[in-house]
Length: 326
Ligand code: PBG
Image 1 (cartoon, helix red, strand yellow):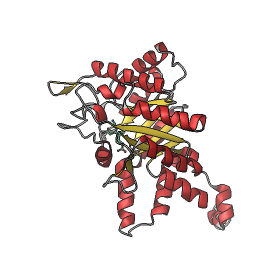
Image 2 (tube, helix red, strand yellow; image 1 turned 90 degrees about the vertical axis):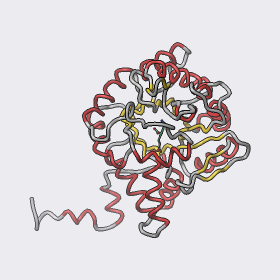
Image 3 (spheres, rainbow, N blue to C red; image 1 turned 135 degrees about the vertical axis):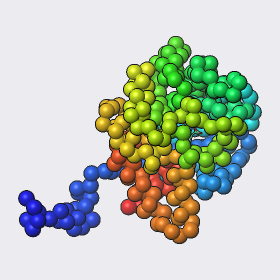
């Protein structure tokens, strides 16, 4: 059937009929809220390049998480901003590290009502800011994986519900799975940053987490933005090695990757809408150039429509509030 018998505008006539036929539903349950936890008492330090985002002390994080949960946000991912850094990322896996302490306190406060995901990486804890052990200017793979796995076990031991390796070393999912199982955490899922691109959209995050590499860049371990088939290869390996949830990152400029990964996997797919994506919307909104609420919700809807089941986003709390008002 075609025009004039067929008229697609019939189903766009009113809000109620548009809601009736809507294909994509965004809810606060889709969001994972990233938090930067710092090791100073009573801190709430604004990140200049990310308006509305703060480095929080654990006590302030508890307050903010409580408010977020009232709006329907049910999961967080934690990044540490440690006081001490060294060449081995010691504070990434230390039992008294900032993230281990944060996980303990957050879990004892909110229990099973909140999903606490630990970002498993070394870069925030390394004096050189790379995601692994550096020798002669190279980021080594296998020795780094050992430390990353040790970090994952310490996070699980502190009570993390999920560990999320973001380093992009080869074989990390396999070694993490083995080490978690050996330590008795065979029920702790791994959310793997499987297709993580070497992206310039991470710049504001590196201000927030103080994790910019002091030399070079991350292109010898994170993916080349020109490659799409390689993402499927990364995903296949991570699944083979035991990933429970796959992640694509960034989101906005990589929706083709989200879609093509969605088409080949049946396990959950997460997309990380990264710091630069957030900052661009905030900056344009502050200039009055775009409507912040509508653009934010449209962007998140687009990521979900592309195929993501869950979205890591700094907009989580505001978006949850807006969805609640709708
Ligand atoms: C750590 C890590 C990064 C992000 C998440 N985990 C930074 C990086 O790889 O340089 C970026 C998140 C964002 O930009 O919001 N490896």
